[in-house]
Every structure is written in C-alpha cells, then in structure tokens.
Length: 238
Length: 359
Image (tube, rainbow over all chains, first blue to last red; front, side, top):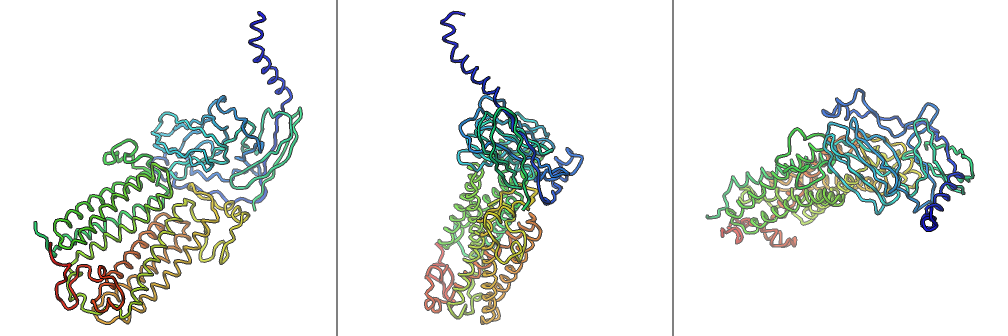
C-alpha cells in the first residue's frame, strides 16, 4: 500500500480501531422484569371473533394484552432503556423494524425502534385495514393511511423519542399496538419470560428505566464496566 | 311563479328533512361511539373510490359507520338543497326564505367540517362538527314549524302565552343550558378515552374523585378496554363530573318549566303538553346517561343518549319559539324584540301581519 493511500485511509482505520476497541469493553445489561400484585383480568375480544371478515381468521377468541404476565409474575412488553441519552440514534443505518397485521391484530403488541429508523407495516390479512399512528410527542407526525388486503408495506419513521406511540386501526377498533421510539440504540423490550437484554453498552454510569404501559415505571442507577451487568425490576400494581 | 303561505307539501318536506337530519345525528353518533371517525382515511373519496361507488363488500367494521354517515350526510344535503329552493320559490315570508339559505350554508359547512376533521386529523373539528350538527337540526325543525299551517293560523294561538316574561326566560335559559350540556358531551366523547369514570352515581367510589397523579395512574392501571382508548386524564374526569352536575341542573330546570307550565291558561295551550314531553325526554336522557356508564359505554346506548339529547334541545327550542310568539301587547311588556314576536304571524286580533304578505 502506498503512503498516499495509507494517509487517505487513516481516518477510517482509526475509527474502526476505536469502534472495535469500544466493543471489546462494551457489555450487556440483562435482567428480568416481574409484576407484583394481581392485574385486572384480560378481556375477551369477542368483537374480533364475531366480525364477519376477521372472525374466520382466528380459531380462538383472543384476549386483550395489557398485562402479559407469567405464572411467577414475569412481565412482558416492558420497555427498558438508558434514560437521558439523546442524539445517539443510528436509526438510519439499521434495518427496518416490522409490524404485521395478522388475524386482525397487530404483531408484536409492543416493540422499540430508534428515531429515524424505518418501521414497515405489513398487512398479511385478506382484509382491509387503516394504519393510524397517533403520536403525542411534538414533532412526531400523526398519519392515517389505507391498507388494502395483502397490500404493499407502508413505511413510517419518527424523529422524536416517545414511549408507547400507539398504532391503531379504526376499521377494527380492537386493533392497536405500541412502538417505543428511542434516540439511541440501547434499549430492549422484555419477552414473555420477563427477560430483557440491552446489548453493547459502552462503559459508564447510567440510569436504566423500565416502563410498562399500564404498570408504570421504575429507574435504577448502574455502572457498566467490561463485563455484563444484571439488573432486575419489580413493577407493582397499585 | 307566485308565492303563497299555504304550502302543506313544503311543510311536509321540511319535516322529512328534519327527520333525515335526526337520523344523520344518530348515524354520526354511531361513528363516534364505535371509534370509527378515522376508519376512512381520505375525503371526499372513500379509499380512493368515488364515495357513491365504494363497493358494498368493503363496508366492513368501522367503515360501515363512517361511510354510511357520509352517504346520509349527502342525502341530507340534497334534501336541504331542495328545501331551500322550494322555500325560495314558494314561501312569501322573506325571513323564512333566508332561513332556508342559512340551512343550506349550514349543511355545506357541516360537510366540509366533517371532511376536514378526517384529512387534517383534528379532534377539535370533530367537536365543532358535533355542535353544529345540533344547531342545524334545530334550524331545520324550526323551518318545519314556521312552514306549518298550525303556526300561521291565529286560532291556534288564541291563548295568552306565559303570563310573565319569567317563564319564557326560564325556558330560554334551560334551552341554552341544554346546548351547553351537549357541547360538554361532545367534548367528552371526542377525547376518545372511553369512560373516564366507570361508576355512577359515585365516581371511583366517591362523591368527587381524586385527580392527583397517583390516582390517575391507579385508574389507568385498573382499566382494561377492548378498543383503543386514550389514557384517562384529570381533564376528562373533570369533564365528566361537570356533565353530571349540568345534567342535574338541566333536569331541575326542565322540571320547573314543566311545573310552571301547568298554570298556563287555555285548554288548547300546547305549551303544557310540550313542557311535559320535554320533561319526559330529559328524564329519559338522565337514565340513558346512567346506563351508558353501567354498560361500559355500549355503543348503541351511548348513541341513543346523543339522539335524545338532540331531541331535548329541539323540544326546548320549539317551546321557546312558541312561547315567544305572543300578542304584541304582552311581548312589548316583556321586552321581546319585534323580529321574534312577529315572525311572520298574523296579529293576535286576527288581522294579517305586515310581514306575512306575499312578495
């Protein structure tokens, strides 16, 4: 490699070295979210099953998904993220997130994306829907778009962070889901086992916040060094 | 084409338009009760189709309510156009012809407001649309009343109206109170937050619910709504409590109007019967309000509550119009403006009025 070529490539090499170096010392934050107390019982969505178009798509009567909790209180759909970080979004570089309309429900019910990350809404149903995000954060745009049966994907993106930005279908009023928008890549949504994982967190001291749409929020201070850190949260029904 | 005051078919057509408008109010109520206001994202097209050509097979879910509402609105618009033209060609009273023009402008404005609410995604326009719907209904009913033979024939008014201006003022105040209550109701419904208070007659088990942050968090934690509902806020709780209090005031005021109407002289005095009907309507409205809460805001009950509310406003307005048409001597003492007290009617003595002449 000629010296001139090396000088031109030096900034890229330096960036790669720094990036690999930071990854080498980055660690994951993992943990489990549990729910204390008895949540109100979920309701059956009888309107879905009795709908002439949606009913045949389902074999069972689905239920609402406000508190997806396991037998030991493991709580799903909790948005866990580093609090107070801004301007660190890599949304434009990461692959698009996907939300699907299947069986006249949104799947998944809760997910998280970054600001300016593309979110593709699919319609796997042989049924007409409308896709209606209703943000509350100033700067995030409310839209309402028609989606024909098995029609092409519709793309959305949001420029401002917002917790639990709602997507809904007005044709089928029981259909709604939530997207948490963060201004950085350090977040996770807990699964049915209550487990979450925030990957590749650079060393430092952080405030980690766990938010459930109904059960509320909790924060905890943590310091990340060069090994994974475990942090559990226990949300409570008041 | 000559104008004449004797237009029975014009009156009947005005009644038809009023009934169609009441139906439209009900269908509009169903749209909001089912949360379907945004089920059709575009306007004036429907999912890209000309709205009159949208396939029936696609009238599904919320689209059924919203699209039916648009079609019913178009029908009322057409009826209003015919009514306006008919009035202009055949009605000798100029002020009534211009009321027809006002009705036409009102229905056009309603259509535009409804469309803009959809394309601009503005809940506030939905509240305005709901309020104007009530006023339009009242206007069309008033036109039907003024175009009736009953209104024009002096023997139907051969009774002294309220002996004092106090009763008339009470009726007017109560009617305005009802309109304010309808606005409150529209504001509540267009929060799209479901039931902000799930129990009645108490509110979260109390006479007045707490609205601090912790209480609101608890209310939202415990609520499980099948349909997408916005979180409960302090404003929504206060709105509903205000609506309950106003309902009690309305009931008391209408009951007082009905009680005082019992002393109206004249066996053929329509005000006694109308006031009694008004009281029945408002009693039914209070019951419907309670059942709306007890049924967790069942769409059909909530919509019936909207329709009976509209009828209560219409009843109050009709009573006002009849009560304020009085012999000149009584009106002058009550300070009623000339434009209201004459309203194209023959004078009390039976002599033709100056306004009632064709031309």
